[in-house]
Length: 135
Image 1 (tube, rainbow, N blue to C red):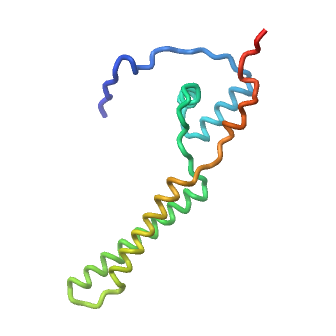
Image 2 (image 1 turned 90 degrees about the horizontal axis):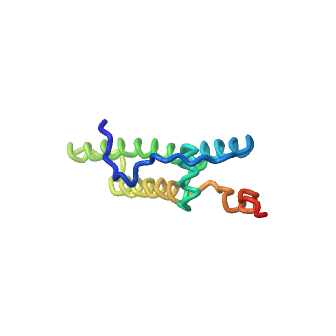
Image 3 (image 1 turned 120 degrees about the horizontal axis):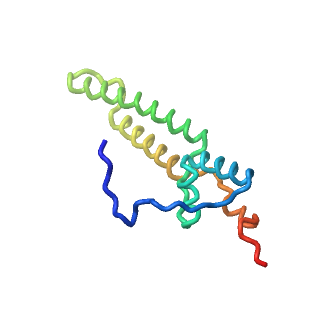
Protein backbone atom coordinates (compact mmCIF):
# COMPACT_ATOMS: atom_id res chain seq x y z
CA UNK A 1 0.00 0.00 0.00
CA UNK A 2 1.52 3.30 -1.07
CA UNK A 3 1.66 6.26 1.29
CA UNK A 4 -0.49 9.19 0.27
CA UNK A 5 1.29 12.46 -0.35
CA UNK A 6 0.27 15.25 2.02
CA UNK A 7 0.78 18.94 1.81
CA UNK A 8 3.77 20.04 3.89
CA UNK A 9 1.39 22.17 5.96
CA UNK A 10 -0.61 19.05 6.90
CA UNK A 11 2.31 16.86 7.98
CA UNK A 12 2.34 16.50 11.76
CA UNK A 13 5.91 17.12 12.82
CA UNK A 14 5.48 19.17 16.01
CA UNK A 15 5.16 17.75 19.51
CA UNK A 16 3.11 19.70 22.04
CA UNK A 17 4.01 18.58 25.57
CA UNK A 18 1.23 18.58 28.15
CA UNK A 19 1.55 17.80 31.85
CA UNK A 20 -1.16 15.53 33.20
CA UNK A 21 -1.84 13.87 36.52
CA UNK A 22 -2.11 10.09 36.59
CA UNK A 23 -5.90 10.38 36.79
CA UNK A 24 -6.11 12.79 33.86
CA UNK A 25 -3.87 10.56 31.73
CA UNK A 26 -6.02 7.53 32.51
CA UNK A 27 -9.19 9.50 31.70
CA UNK A 28 -7.77 10.48 28.31
CA UNK A 29 -6.78 6.88 27.60
CA UNK A 30 -10.26 5.64 28.51
CA UNK A 31 -12.02 8.31 26.45
CA UNK A 32 -9.80 7.68 23.45
CA UNK A 33 -10.52 3.95 23.67
CA UNK A 34 -14.26 4.63 23.95
CA UNK A 35 -14.08 6.93 20.93
CA UNK A 36 -12.06 4.35 18.98
CA UNK A 37 -9.11 6.62 18.26
CA UNK A 38 -5.64 7.39 19.53
CA UNK A 39 -5.15 9.74 22.46
CA UNK A 40 -3.37 12.15 20.09
CA UNK A 41 -6.32 12.23 17.70
CA UNK A 42 -8.76 12.66 20.59
CA UNK A 43 -6.81 15.61 21.97
CA UNK A 44 -6.44 17.20 18.51
CA UNK A 45 -10.15 16.94 17.82
CA UNK A 46 -11.07 18.21 21.26
CA UNK A 47 -8.58 21.08 21.18
CA UNK A 48 -9.49 22.12 17.65
CA UNK A 49 -13.23 21.96 18.36
CA UNK A 50 -13.92 19.31 15.75
CA UNK A 51 -16.79 16.96 16.55
CA UNK A 52 -15.98 13.48 17.74
CA UNK A 53 -17.23 10.62 15.60
CA UNK A 54 -20.60 9.13 16.47
CA UNK A 55 -20.44 5.83 18.28
CA UNK A 56 -23.11 3.17 18.14
CA UNK A 57 -24.26 1.40 21.27
CA UNK A 58 -23.51 -2.32 21.61
CA UNK A 59 -27.20 -3.09 21.18
CA UNK A 60 -27.37 -1.05 17.99
CA UNK A 61 -24.24 -2.71 16.62
CA UNK A 62 -25.70 -6.16 17.34
CA UNK A 63 -29.04 -5.14 15.80
CA UNK A 64 -27.23 -3.74 12.75
CA UNK A 65 -25.34 -7.03 12.37
CA UNK A 66 -28.50 -9.14 12.81
CA UNK A 67 -30.34 -7.05 10.21
CA UNK A 68 -27.43 -7.66 7.86
CA UNK A 69 -27.80 -11.40 8.35
CA UNK A 70 -31.54 -11.17 7.69
CA UNK A 71 -30.75 -9.12 4.58
CA UNK A 72 -28.42 -11.87 3.36
CA UNK A 73 -31.20 -14.42 3.80
CA UNK A 74 -33.63 -12.16 1.96
CA UNK A 75 -31.16 -11.77 -0.90
CA UNK A 76 -30.98 -15.55 -1.20
CA UNK A 77 -34.77 -15.78 -1.22
CA UNK A 78 -35.01 -13.03 -3.87
CA UNK A 79 -32.46 -14.86 -6.01
CA UNK A 80 -34.40 -18.14 -5.66
CA UNK A 81 -37.64 -16.32 -6.54
CA UNK A 82 -36.12 -14.67 -9.62
CA UNK A 83 -34.61 -17.99 -10.73
CA UNK A 84 -37.99 -19.74 -10.33
CA UNK A 85 -39.70 -17.03 -12.40
CA UNK A 86 -37.08 -17.33 -15.17
CA UNK A 87 -37.54 -21.10 -15.23
CA UNK A 88 -41.33 -20.75 -15.43
CA UNK A 89 -41.94 -22.24 -12.00
CA UNK A 90 -44.02 -20.93 -9.13
CA UNK A 91 -41.88 -18.52 -7.08
CA UNK A 92 -41.48 -19.28 -3.36
CA UNK A 93 -42.43 -15.69 -2.52
CA UNK A 94 -43.88 -12.53 -4.05
CA UNK A 95 -40.89 -10.73 -5.67
CA UNK A 96 -42.35 -7.23 -5.17
CA UNK A 97 -43.00 -7.93 -1.49
CA UNK A 98 -39.48 -9.31 -1.05
CA UNK A 99 -37.95 -6.26 -2.70
CA UNK A 100 -40.04 -3.93 -0.52
CA UNK A 101 -39.00 -5.86 2.60
CA UNK A 102 -35.34 -5.73 1.57
CA UNK A 103 -35.49 -1.96 1.03
CA UNK A 104 -37.18 -1.51 4.42
CA UNK A 105 -34.45 -3.60 6.04
CA UNK A 106 -31.70 -1.48 4.45
CA UNK A 107 -33.48 1.68 5.65
CA UNK A 108 -33.58 0.30 9.21
CA UNK A 109 -29.84 -0.35 9.08
CA UNK A 110 -29.19 3.19 7.80
CA UNK A 111 -31.38 4.65 10.56
CA UNK A 112 -29.52 2.71 13.23
CA UNK A 113 -26.15 3.79 11.87
CA UNK A 114 -27.09 7.47 11.61
CA UNK A 115 -29.36 8.16 14.58
CA UNK A 116 -28.12 6.13 17.52
CA UNK A 117 -25.37 7.87 19.46
CA UNK A 118 -24.09 6.92 22.87
CA UNK A 119 -24.22 9.98 25.07
CA UNK A 120 -20.84 11.56 25.67
CA UNK A 121 -20.20 13.57 28.80
CA UNK A 122 -17.93 16.13 27.10
CA UNK A 123 -20.33 19.03 27.45
CA UNK A 124 -21.15 18.20 31.06
CA UNK A 125 -17.51 18.22 32.14
CA UNK A 126 -16.83 21.84 31.28
CA UNK A 127 -16.88 22.76 34.97
CA UNK A 128 -13.79 20.60 35.53
CA UNK A 129 -10.63 22.46 36.51
CA UNK A 130 -8.87 21.90 33.16
CA UNK A 131 -8.05 25.58 32.77
CA UNK A 132 -4.94 27.01 34.37
CA UNK A 133 -5.50 28.97 37.55
CA UNK A 134 -5.06 32.68 37.15
CA UNK A 135 -3.08 34.40 39.83
